[in-house]
Length: 338
Image (cartoon, rainbow, N blue to C red; front, side, top):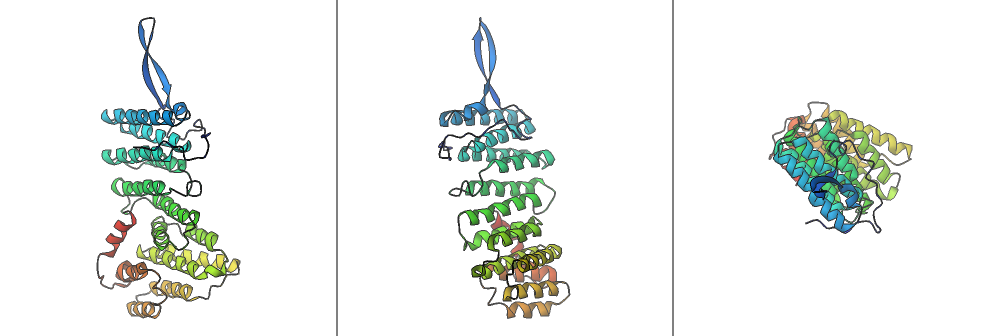
C-alpha cells in the first residue's frame, strides 16, 4: 500500500502540464458515467488534476492509473499499458508522492518484463522520463532507495529484453550516478559498498569521462581525502579491466591525472602508481609480472576485498590467462543487482 503523505513540506505545486513524450501517448483520464436527460453519457475525469488536490485525490488517482494500465494489459495493448502506468508514475512523482509513484514505476517495468517487450527507443525514453521524475538524492536524501531499486529493475529488464549481455550501458550509467549521488547527499563518505557498486555500473555504462568528473567533483584538491580519491580511481580502473575494457580504463586514468594536475593535487601516490603499472602490464602477455605487481601492492589494495576478487577473477582470467578460483564474474553481477 502506498503512503500518501506528500514528501515535500508544503502542498505540491509541480505542474503536470509539461508532460514527457511518454505521457502524451495516452491521455491520463478515466471515465465515469453520468445521466443527462435520461441518456447515459461518459465524462472524462482528469487524473492529473486529481493528484494535485491532495492525498485523498492522489490515492484515488493511483487506483485509476493502475486500473487503466491493467485494462490495456488484459487486452494485450502492451504499449498503451506501459504508457498509462508510466504516465501515472511521472505525475505522482512530480507531485512528490514518491512511494505511490514508485509503485506505478515498478508496474511499468513489470508490464515490460511480462510481455518480453523489446527495449526500443520509445520504451527506453519512457524509462528515462520516469527516472527523471524521481526527486534527486539531495531532494529526497532520507529515502533514496526507491529510485535505486527502480533503476536496478530497469537494468535487469534490459538484460532480459535487450541486446547486450550485461544490459544497456545507459541504464547502468544512470544507476551509477544515482548510487554516487546518494553517497554524496547522505554524506556517507566512507560507504565503501555504495562506492564500489557505483564503480561497477560506471564500467558497465562505458563512461570513463563521467566517472573521472565525479571523482574530481567529489574529492577535488582536498588533500585530506587523497587516499579516498585514489581508492576511487583504483576501483574504477579495476572494474573497467574486469569487463575487458582496456580502452576506457586507460581513458579514466588519463583524465584522472589531467584533472588532478590542473587542481595541483598530488599524483605520485602508491595507488596511482599501481594503476599506471597495471594498465601498462595489461597491454602485454605478462602473467608473471602481473602476479608480482599484485603481490607488491597487496597491502595498499586491502581497503576493499573486491580488489583481489577482480584481480584474481576476471582480470587475471581474461587478460592474463590465469585460471580462475571461482566464477567471480557471475557472482559479481548478481551482487550488483541484488
